[in-house]
Image (cartoon, rainbow, N blue to C red):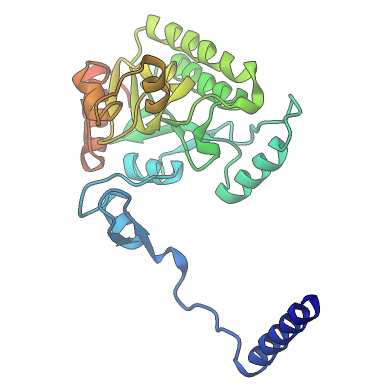
Amino acid sequence: METLFRKRKEQLENFKKAIRRFVPERTKREIPDNIFKKCEKCGRSVSVRRLKENNHVCPDCGRCFKMSAAERIEMVFDAGSFYETDRRMTSTNSENFEGYSEKLAKYKKRTGLNEAVVCGTAKIDGRKCAVAVMDSNFMMGSMGAVVGEKICRTIELAHSKKLPLIIFCTSGGARMQEGIISLMQMAKTSAALKRFSDSGNLYISVLTHPTTGGVSASFAMLGDIIIAEPGALIGFAGKRVIEKTINESLPREFQKAEFVMEKGFVDMIADRDSLRKTLSDLIAMHTEDAG
């Protein structure tokens, strides 16, 4: 029986070799794989070009697609006005967490970023402000020591220059690979914002999908004005974790931006088409001279 199976296997391998000899190799695809993206809400495929023209929002159902930090900066701020600070800051594997160094290297190569937040100054309709934009493409926007430090430096920059501060939040939470150091960033950023607030400066927090964990439990929810994108997931622990803890079922829309605003945790919801004007108007109303 073993001989029979061995012969059958050899015949199959010989057949495959013969087929490869007569069938020409596949030509390279002329159309790249990233021409279309599928909407997770309505299931329709949308061209990447159309998404870009529509601020990365599905034209059929209005679902917000993920945006990189660079794309968000381009969408909101005056062209050519963004000046990046602390670009070279990068995390190290100080806890010797297995596989963390390789993961950091992978995401640096994939995104072209050194960390999950891009910081600096920019202008909206000529009004200068300090900016921090988180990017979920880099380790799901998780917050470690460098993310916390960059956020704090941006807050201190806004404080010293008396600039309004805008932070675009998106995160899966604190970075477990850095242990207690990552959790410390919650208190660190919150303390920096308290000093900033005491000086009478304006802080606008923009919550995008998703804003969860240690970020939602610190600087994300400490804005003088808190804006959310439509449909953004906002919360601390996940819905299933909460349901198992309290042994109750939660509403279907639980932790969605609209539900969170209804409960008073968010001041307004602004779609991407109106976000730039909303931010510009708020800065104009709350600052004497932000130019």
